[in-house]
Length: 137
Image 1 (tube, rainbow, N blue to C red):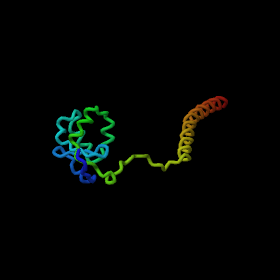
Image 2 (image 1 turned 180 degrees about the horizontal axis):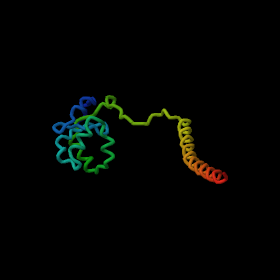
Image 3 (image 1 turned 90 degrees about the horizontal axis):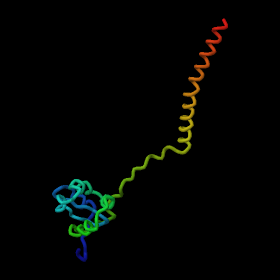
């Protein structure tokens, strides 16, 4: 590592996203992993898929060994300007259903269950009544 590392914008790093030229952003540092693609134990596709984004979480979630972390230094090319890195999109379900909407949905669901129980009983009651009423006449 030099004393004054080069700083790259995210868009510049993201252009290096294929098998012949693959750069990764991990913990704010930029690594040219192109020569390592064929040697990577997880295959080259994993590294290529991790390009064009901040791959820090992907890297940390795998649980790399200390020797793998030390080996990364030989692929270091500079730092990324973190202000240019897009924020990851967190999917959150829409908050349009309020607690009252959920409560009314639950109460209508329980009403439906009650009706599913009472209607057959009512039909059986009507059948017995008709049979009993029919016998008297």
